[in-house]
Image (cartoon, rainbow, N blue to C red):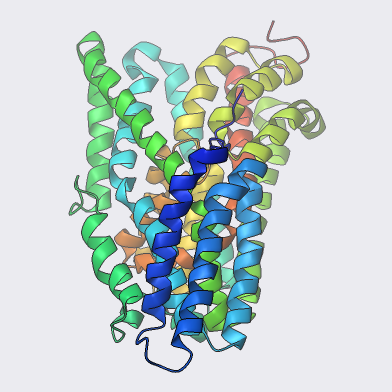
Length: 478
């Protein structure tokens, strides 16, 4: 069965010819523009090697790599090769070519991610809340489930905010703050690459739905509408089916965009390294350390505190039973793809009640994202620190509330949280261009936080099974 992380296989043989011809035309145009005016010394040679480099980048990341590697490996290769290319071109004095022309691919990737985020959050929250069912009918089980999900998500966000405030990985990064990933930094230049990034792409790629609405307004209305659809029962089924179809369609668009992630990451990493040098690598390492510390801390809370205290399940038994689910979650970066394995591990291997697992885990894969909530909170504060933005207590509270709420609307697919960070950025006043700072390492952190997401769901199934009076142990679910 195909994993959500798999990209469709690239067409082989003659089918690639039109695509390669299009790449060659685009590369020739950008290469010539980058060496303009043509009467300058060495302009022709410069245009030729730059066009060749652009063509190679497009061919490798859009045709060759998808044939031979899965998306995680493609992104890793893009990150390493982008850093190397950015460093080398900077040493040769071509920083402008990297930021203005290679940077076009990074700008395109970020804009495409942003274009469907508000509709996706709205539709996902509506489906997630409505899919729970009418709380008056489901009774205490739903109340317990929602209470557990909200509490553990809140704990995760508090852990993340505490660590990023204590470690302060983005403080003192003046060079990173002044990098040209910020939109204002390219205002002075008027070459074709800059005009594409600043004028053409934003004019074409925009979200036409709810674009001017504040994110919290959209989230609040989605919560109300989802609850109302659940309350009206059969009368709301037609609307709910429509929302579910829209949800699948928007997720499909996200998956299409993620197929462009390797070339986008290559461009963003090349641009950052060409402008900042190795300092950017050290900054990202400190940021990764902060996120991973938070994820490990929350994982320990779930396994070593919540499971033994509230579910009376020993941590070792839980870890042994859930190992297959952890492996699938880490390799696929998808809570949705892990769901069948999660249900089997929680019910058969650990011993939670199978009916409760069948009810809670699909809901949890939609609305309970502890690791994602922690991650977006850390990423938001980190980027704010880089830009020198003083968030304060009110900003921390807004990040807390928004992170908890947007985790409800996070699709259980790889990379979905990248775009959802823009919700928090907009709410707190962080430049959206700051997304480019963290995109290079997002894929690895996505793999790690998916494990925490799955752990939170399965630990909740243990807790609720015990609270409902079902034995939790070997064979108990049968």
